[in-house]
Image (cartoon, rainbow, N blue to C red):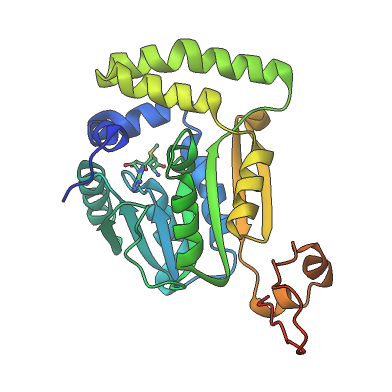
Amino acid sequence: MPPSGFLHKMFSSLPPRYDLLNRLLTWGQDQGWRRKAVVECLKDRPRWVLDLGCGTGDLALQLARLGGPGARVLGLDFSLPMLEAARAKARRAKMEIAFIRADAAHLPLRPGLLDAIGSSFTLRNLTYRNPGAGQYLSQAHEALRPGARWVMVETSQPPGALVRWAFHSYLRCLVPSLGSLLSGNRGAYRYLAGSALGFFPAEEVSRMLLETGFQKVTFRRLLGGAVAIHTAVIRFLSERSMSVPRLLQRTPPQLPPLSPSPRVVIVAL
Ligand SMILES: C[S@@+](CC[C@H](N)C(=O)[O-])C[C@H]1O[C@@H](n2cnc3c(N)ncnc32)[C@H](O)[C@@H]1O
């Protein structure tokens, strides 16, 4: 059954002018930001890499191009028109990418299959005022093997007041009107601008990723902080179990009351 809902409907209406608007609204910088995220994503030479929320496939294509023959790239999205545009682009570029239609809330992948996930401008849609946020994040976490990483490029909140004011004014005034003029879809570009206005600062994104279970979480700001590249890594099990401070910080489990006979309580770490 095709997924329903506001986001699915909205993204399915965008493809004809989506790439053009991405280039225009970012002054041609979006592909450069994706490239930076791709370099970070391919750092450990992953074999299985997923572009989560691949849209028209710009990140997936860069992953395939830079990942070389060793990388098997998958692109996943719930919008069929987005996937069709992505598949046509991959065919023209003679890139072998497997595109999957699925909802990120239920990734149809074996747990621990992936060596890396890359996402460009998808995280915001999965987490901003989205009641399914926890489920999306934990599905991505579950699909990655220990040692694997998720690299996300996303809009962010500039820490400096002046840059933040300029960025927010741009989002309020120009994005909805230019988006509406060129795509004929005012509602979509109002949503995209509104979600960028209200999206979490980078520190808050880091907190969410740590809460999901990622251990090494970092971010890098671009364009004065209007955009950020987040990297979240799942540590190897040995690294995790050797961390004494981590053990001490754990909230003690509710133990049963002591009984006269000696008991051994095993706590899974
Ligand atoms: C802002 S677009 C970004 C597309 C592309 N990654 C890019 O860089 O241009 C967000 C994409 O995420 C997809 N998406 C949003 N929620 C999703 C979900 N729950 N499951 C799968 N895809 C989703 C949308 O269909 C859309 O293609």
